[in-house]
Image (cartoon, rainbow, N blue to C red; front, side, top):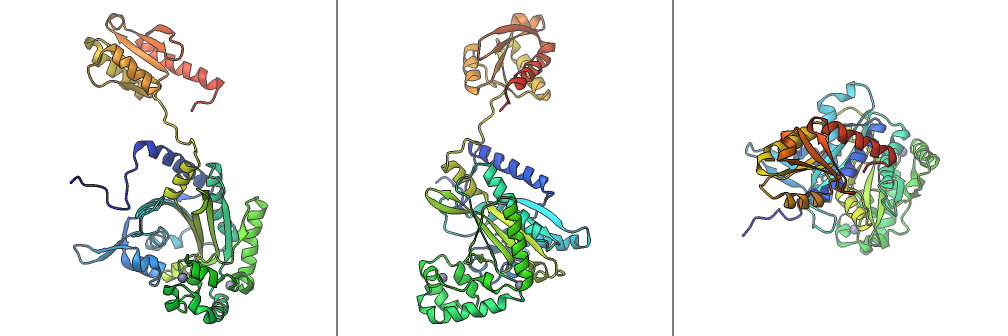
Length: 429
Ligand SMILES: [Zn+2]
Ligand SMILES: [Zn+2]
């Protein structure tokens, strides 16, 4: 039997990657505009990092991690998310003693052992950013605005931004009590798993996807009614930024997000996909995480976005992003005696920044012209034995069929001039 890619993983082939590149390049540009620099952390981390950073009781840590013991007896885990690794790197390189805040973004594969389905893979790709070292609500607004603007500019339809504040260690205990009081008489209506452990972390009941938990918590107390003054002011400031930047949002008191480390702001962006709303980005503030991972008290905020889902949604919505760019020139050889000359000419064009295709095999001129037509090249350069002996080639414009004889030494200049003339008129693809 032939070996296949492991379940939940897949190959991204060139045709599909074109749209990925458009999304990634636009994201990088947006990060640059907002003053973020890229960070790359290992795909493998000590298991302890995620147990402490994400929380032992979460499904993510208890059921979904790829954890193994390496040959040296260490427990390692393929990273299931990016934030814990960024915080670890921030502490390991003592970035907290440099200028603050530190603004970084990342882009790369993450791993979770989940049931694969459309747009959900065990190796999936996340784009995310973290701002470490400031409590300014402008940083919260920034991490919401970047994914929102990114997906808006890519034409993702039906974007819906939900926002909430889940408070801080000062005010959350009061909310927790109120939620426990609310849940106590309703325990039997919860999903089987939350009937058992609703008390340990009642906020997770709000986050539960089961119908039972959703129905039972429909009237649950709202986090925003319990915020302390600091949290309430912070939330109001974040909302003001969004309003003044005309980013439409709704406050959703059920939005608490599954991970333990969030404080104050949490948000989620969904997009319309096949009539349903699919989450495409989410994040929030995590003022306690740096300390949790053994560092000083450093406030931080960030977001992450699943690119597989974003790209699937863009494809379902029929976007035409990421069209292939044909070569500008196809170099054809009319005769075996000029084959090498034609290929060398193609190399020279490429060195001059002109995308040039040519044939590898030993095919007739007619066959080569067919290939040239298929590539969509605007020009064909025919290297013929008689012209080549004079240091000349035939330059043919594919659209019109017009031909001219050009000195081989002038070819690059001629092509560059015609390219510039074309760009003056209409934008190049
Ligand atoms: Zn508070
Ligand atoms: Zn539940």
